[in-house]
Length: 136
View 1 (cartoon, one colour):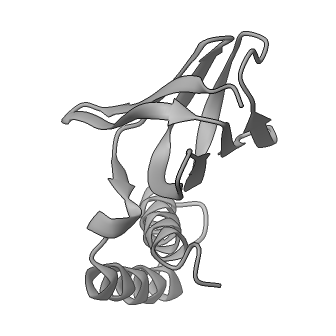
View 2 (cartoon, one colour):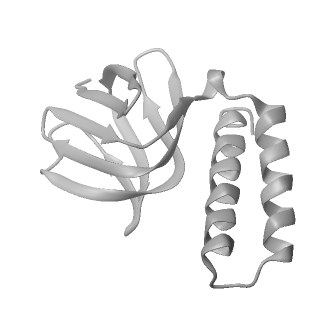
């Protein structure tokens, strides 16, 4: 079965590098499933979970937006922040979710503070979704 070389990179360095049989991401235009030899494409990403189907396992990564750049033989995900499933601190993510929900309840919709809190909530939810991946 063929693979595509995949890198997930943040400003702090490379989070993942390896060969994937399939990559699933949520772009702003919708869900993308990328197989080897996919047509070239660049797309902005949502704050969500990335699924990488590898030879011996499935790897999940929480990405906090960014872009995916697809070439037939290479895929690069550039994100401002990303975490492997096994690196996610679940209690910290749960606390961040509760705090963001509390902020949203007190803020006026459409304000900058509201949008910031909404983004914090999405990040916490993406981290929790990633941490629970593969066990649901």
